[in-house]
Image (cartoon, rainbow, N blue to C red):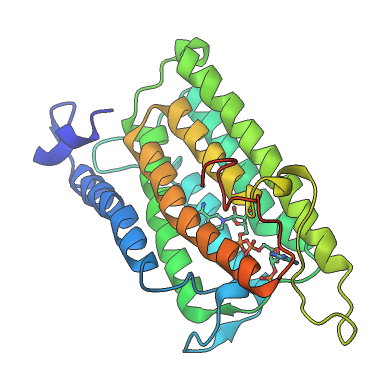
Length: 275
Ligand SMILES: NC(=O)c1ccc[n+]([C@@H]2O[C@H](COP(=O)([O-])OP(=O)(O)OC[C@H]3O[C@@H](n4cnc5c(N)ncnc54)[C@H](OP(=O)(O)O)[C@@H]3O)[C@@H](O)[C@H]2O)c1
């Protein structure tokens, strides 16, 4: 957890320009949650059901999701092969395990889930570019940490934080898929021309408690990754995910409440019984 001790540009006493770069990226991702939360007070999250009047054109929904998400596994994977000026990546078993978690999540997000979706609304170009920018830096700092600069001895796999974090990650991953299945089924039953809106009230599973259980599980998943890796880049990704998805969930919740007069009044936005 000593990424902040890299500020003098050295790693284990050796000067390395990449350490300076990694530090700058980390500081940017420290600011990111603050920027997103402040922006969410004046702007709506610009895609899907909240994407009204966003300028500069749109890309087809499925293509957009593949492009903006696939950069993440690609860059994380590259981090395992490209040397810095002083270090060659020498990942341990734990490092490869984290690579596996990252790839499983992003192969599902970029390809499997897109392929299984009956339809995705076109995405504003602005939102797509922001996501590519975010995913590039995020995959870089997390991949580099796990492959090169973090310390994960073989016995790391027996540590309680590793085991707890992995369980949280898997529960979050599976819960997210189950919640997305509910939304996909709603969309499959939509008949253009007959139904007034392509959006309906989701029911069942954790939707009885919150409007956005897929976001709840996504936050759980990356919190698990942060606990398992015990790393500042991991913690920053979990914070960015929460900063991104909690305000969007609140906006979606309000959208449901104003759009559907019979929207269940006991439902919260994203955290059961709390928010
Ligand atoms: N880690 C992060 O920072 C981060 C950021 C963003 C998203 N994500 C994850 O990416 C996944 C997709 O996120 P998202 O923001 O696109 O979710 P979303 O806005 O809830 O939409 C997900 C899909 O379900 C459809 N849908 C949503 N509500 C519906 C309803 N009431 N009736 C029928 N169809 C509905 C959407 O259709 P349309 O396309 O027509 O809107 C879209 O295809 C989620 O699992 C989320 O957790 C992660």
